[in-house]
Length: 202
Image 1 (cartoon, rainbow, N blue to C red):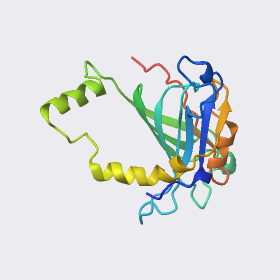
Image 2 (cartoon, helix red, strand yellow):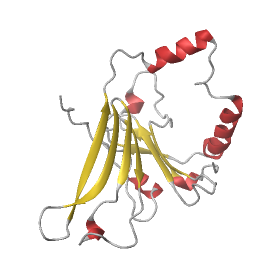
Image 3 (cartoon, one colour):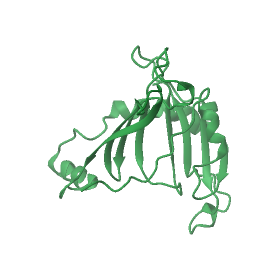
């Protein structure tokens, strides 16, 4: 993983954070970060990884979107305005796997419409992640713990931004962060805004 380029990082702080109890009046601590990562291997060469996280955003969710490239030849008419196929992995608070694709609408015309196929995990009485982690620590099972070499590699990735951080941009609570976060995206790409999950069918 390539060290972060400060030009590909946006830090934010929600308006009102400095009024919180125990927070310095001129605090430069971020409550939001958006960044672009690069992994220099043959498998991921040229594939950008975008990460956005923060407090006081509209939806609380941990979600990964893998957007597939559009094919060189359009199958459907007006394909330019249609979304790309994708895989959606929601890790919390629900566990959901979604596959989004364009399918042909009914009728004679070659018109596509976006459809998402969803699989949901319904946990019964599972332990919380912290319960499992603490239990593993007590038993001496380190398989879920980060090793020293991984921690040092992660520090090398973020060190340049920690030493010379970009300025903190103020954003409104309930928004998706500062508008400048759009500058992290490449070309015509835009951020994926997670939505609350619909109630699962019984």
